[in-house]
Length: 443
Image (cartoon, rainbow, N blue to C red; front, top):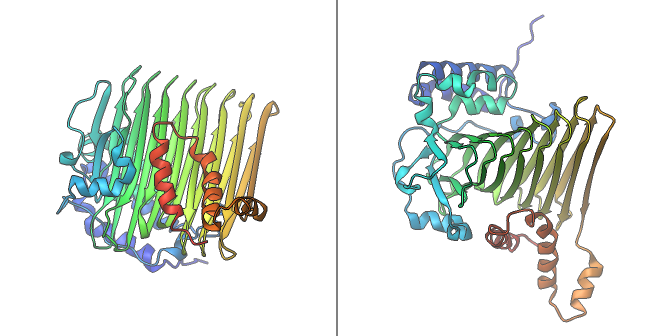
């Protein structure tokens, strides 16, 4: 008996939209073939749904009602530098090298114009145009098992291809800014490829923002592939403030060689639906990873953080700390899985997720997991959710501090532990952005 699979309106629309824009997407014949294979893989997989364990709490098949038209082609009206600074808030004051992507397309006139020693930057669209583009990026193989990655492969328009030379020490952070400006509902799809050479050191800020006033519904799919070589150090901060009407799907796949260090931080707020997926793999001994973050939800926002930390080799260390604050009917999700392979002796892995509930209607779903196949390891995990401590509130009020101020201080101190994971130079800007969003949460 043959069982027909019924596809939703959005699933059918995504396939149809691909056929409509395939000829306009960047890349030669090899890339076009990889794109077509990817959309074929998606057609077989469909959107992730709650019957898949990894998507149990974020049912995209139910959440995405329609497939938005694809943003493709040149930018019609780039924003001004003043508009970009307004969108960046306090991050605009940081001394960084900017690479700006507007509606999924790199805009050189808004980006760093000076060549940097030890750094090679190429827009992804330009890289894909080379004859070896598809082979270099392994596009066909990347989309076989993951529907979100398959969609990214099929629709990607641009992104940052960054190579940092062996031993290079970048003095300033690199800011990869992805900004939505269109007032029309569109799907934006970007991909970053970062290669950090042996013993190199860099900080990358990846910001996904919406220009003030661009209130139309939007969908985005962002993928970052990170290759961190022996002894290299990468700090990676992801800022997502994409707008109440945005559905933002992000995938990050770091691979760490021997002795490498990866410090990541995700800050998520003011976005309708977010899925931040991290699949990290230790490919060499003695590497260290710290993947942390803070998420703030209000209204009906849905923020999902899903991590898979794969200790494939021994002597590696992983840490994960996520703090969330949920108000109104917001929903937070944390899924953290640590896998310790049989050869990964001397593994040290710990994770913690903590959420502060400001409303009885808010929801937090947490699923920490340990899969241990070695016997000489130190691993642990935990998860908590709680309301504001009334005894602490009383302590503040007894000393003449207004209840609203007391609540604000307690909430800020709660998330500060996570924000302290960020480099000291970036911490004030991040805390200022967080305070502004905390003030918007109902009490």
